[in-house]
Picture 1 (cartoon, rainbow, N blue to C red):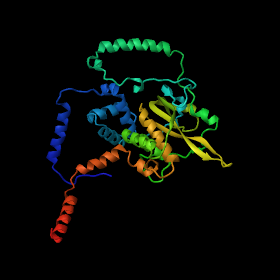
Picture 2 (tube, one colour):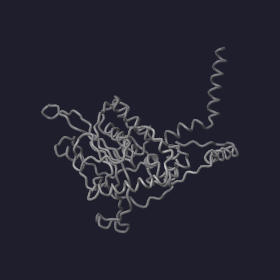
Picture 3 (cartoon, helix red, strand yellow):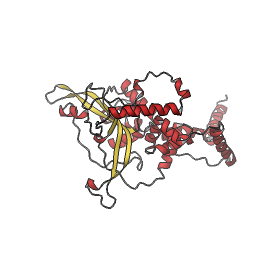
Picture 4 (cartoon, rainbow, N blue to C red):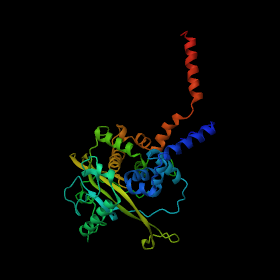
Length: 368
């Protein structure tokens, strides 16, 4: 829903925009877009994910323009995305081919290929590092040279593009609930508004575009009791996926003619949720349902929360708000929610005066 002021002071608006620029540059310190790309990975990844546009440079530019305001940066990037032509659709990507940078499982201690801790704040002490105040170019270069030399020795001969999936081992033991494979062409939620009930493909798109804090909060609510979901992370992967498109003039199923167009970094999570099922012999047995989460960049909390909400919406038994697709999907969109809240700042003179007139008339008629 969009709101536009019918009339207003053009000069006042121009002055407000000028003041906005003044507030950004009056400290006389300029932040380079490339610096944002290099030093604010988490923020860049969040903006790309919530905007559904994979471009670290454009996300960093939006962050600079929005002065670090996440919701404004997402708004800017989504608006820009809507102006871009879509020339091709990429081939379906199998995440088994991910060039893994980080891979952990909370379900198994030992997994084929091993646990790869990678880069994460999970293992830090969360203490302020005051050495960063005086960090210098020289110390940075020295540390990098030493680290890269050691990394080359450790990773020599290691293939991280063909690691098996943890979920496959549970499938082999038939410990997962059986589901019918759905090969239906997915509906693009950026081209068609949501219509309820939704498909799983639509839900996953909305969840991965969802505002990180909102998705995390509702995922937490599902665990805390509004859905009674308690998953275990079967596998969490962070890495890069190759993207290909079919030949422009020969879009056949012959993948040998495909064109490689680049790669994207993603976080993928498969969560296992235990459920009790009643078999034909009236015996109750435990099985696992899978919740799935994936998003641009490295954003593990969001991907885990997304997997929780995916399971809640796909398999959840109605009765809790976190299992209501309309409640979840319509309240996690950062642009929709912030836009609607922000519209309250626009003039509501006529409607408010109408309410005042009604209150005054009622008081007058009642003799108050």
